[in-house]
Length: 238
Ligand SMILES: Nc1ncnc2c1ncn2[C@@H]1O[C@H](COP(=O)(O)OP(=O)(O)O)[C@@H](O)[C@H]1O
Ligand SMILES: [Mg+2]
Figure 1 (cartoon, rainbow, N blue to C red):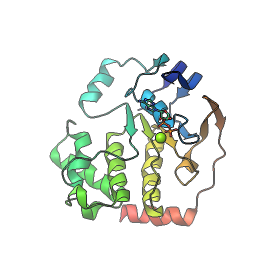
Figure 2: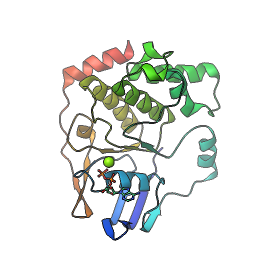
Figure 3: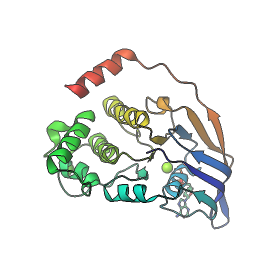
Figure 4: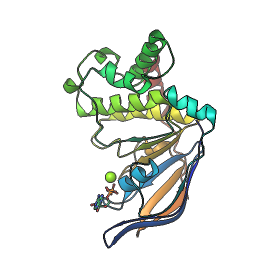
């Protein structure tokens, strides 16, 4: 669960244009990072590079070599680094099927898997929609399904790309519950957003892409709204 990624001299260029050059970067173990920057500075590109979905123009990315035990855990459904897309791809099926997809290879009984999916759906407040087809859900509900699908895999590092764009407050709070739970379990999160919100308030560090490079700084923890927390914890356990 607690891996670390480091990079050296990461550069991204599109033709002649240098998007960014980042001398050094490190995520994890157990980080919560708010990645900010204006539109078009390269936040999505950086997350995709860190997730291994895109190659940088130059530079080195070090992910830990997996030992046999970790390789085995991949077969049981754990993933190291997950990129959560801004407009998530969900497949043609029910809400339940979409969430259970993440743990389809886990060596557990169907009853145990079902219990996990139901827990995930409760956390995002969608348990009553488990059997609905994904196409009837609103944008915010789909984002919650995507988060539940990522949460159930318990990734070491979850890269959340503009997760709160166009979400209502309830959906943001649901994502906060899952994000907090992952942090408590030892995962690292990177959350991009062009503005601060309840999700970015979980972060202890800030990465700011500016002038084609990245500046890291600590973030002050904001004291959470206790009453709001209690409300969502209660609805989660009911
Ligand atoms: N495959 C690509 N080819 C050319 N330019 C690209 C490609 N992908 C992204 N870009 C450009 O890189 C810049 C950064 O994009 P992006 O990482 O999406 O920024 P952000 O997420 O910060 O808004 C944009 O100007 C975008 O047009
Ligand atoms: Mg982006």
